[in-house]
Image (cartoon, rainbow, N blue to C red; front, top):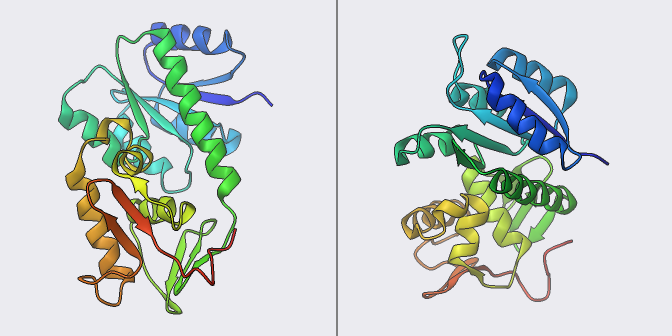
Amino acid sequence: MTETILVVDDEPRVVRLVTHVLRSKNYRVLTAADGAAALEILAVEQPNLVLLDIMLDAGSDGYAVCRQLREFSDVPVIMLTAKARDADILAGFDAGADDYLTKPFNSQELLARVRVLLRRSQRHEEIMTAPRQCGDIEMDLTRYTLRVRGEPVALTRTEFALLRELMLNANRVVLHQTLLTRVWGAEYRNDMDYLRAYVRYLRRKIERDPAQPQYILTASGIGYMLKCPTDAPPTR
């Protein structure tokens, strides 16, 4: 089946270029010049990926559009931006983007980023079977819910994504760089402070004693592992 990509940009020249590049690889391309049109198309067409410009006219910007679409969709989003400052890139990730590409960009790099996110999204859909059990922890990957010792536990989007990666690799050590790349993106693969902080947050929510964790274990200098009882492996 042909994947559909929504291109949101108010520069006709950029839209024509991106459309040509994507159609050359047989992607179906939809376009929108402003946030309102983009959100309407997204809701109706449910594309497989969105290429979203940060600097839009008509009273909206890419950050706002991304935050709005994240209220009802997990579609992969690549920000297209002429802003290359770290603060601008971080703002995009905070708004819910999965990746970013700085203008002007190489067409081959664009296609590579698109392929990576589409593969990741396909893998995400394949593994979203629920629930998964690990001792006292029960995750519903479809409904984005967590219960610990029978009680519901609220997680942020990032906390859930991190615990999901650990759950999907239960009883195996997941490398620091792998967790950072899958949860935050390739640009964060060396940012250990992010990972340590969110591991602390998770331990506070799921461990009986966060100082003596029984589930999220540290492999010093290597990564983390979600340890599940060997007599009750996580359901798959």
